[in-house]
Image 1 (tube, rainbow, N blue to C red):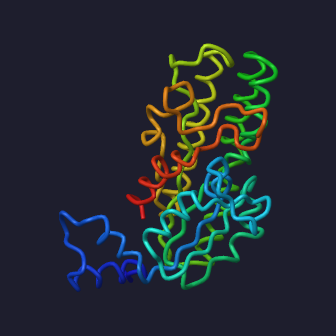
Image 2 (image 1 turned 30 degrees about the horizontal axis):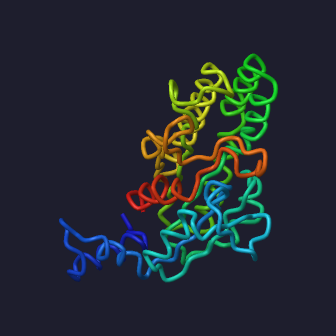
Image 3 (image 1 turned 90 degrees about the horizontal axis):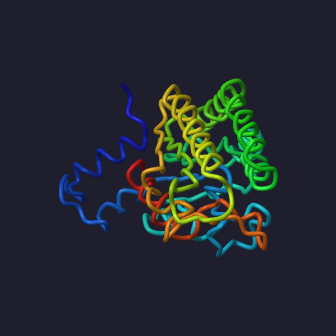
Length: 269
């Protein structure tokens, strides 16, 4: 089997003795990224909505210097870093505009996508404003969409990535569960609604993981990383509903990016 450029680089790096196989320090581990061309694609969970510190030049895409791709690049010092993720992006936005950041030289790609296609924002709006029954119905509609339509849309994205960056390692990151069931929240959504929303996140992650695996990509779930830091815990890493800044609601905080997503990216990349 022909080694990818990323795999060949990693092998030569180890043979050169620059990284010990065991007990490697964080600093030496980061050195593996030198010589790697990294591209971050996807939606608001990758652009960093909710983390603050937005790059003004990114406009409505709201790319944050505290998002996991920017944090990983700042620490790991890849040869190049293209930050193409954009708030609100759907699969069609990725294939329509973000894939231009890729090339045959790309070694590493990360992406979160699919939540907007499945109607994440509308699900949460319905659940907050229309009550439990409407919430459950809207969640079920989203699950049906994940069954019927989303797999083909993800295939289009993953095929497009492979076509543009045939040798790249591709890390597909998932979404966290939003709520701690039986947690500290005393007002707001019912426990039944919260449970349905969490179940829908798991359902989306399972479908995404299947499509990623079928394309030979690495799926990196983050639910475990966020465990104990969901909404309705004493130290949440996700914004709850914020009427003053609706766009940041239900997105990771800066700590959610650095403490939740970044370690998962480290392990997968």
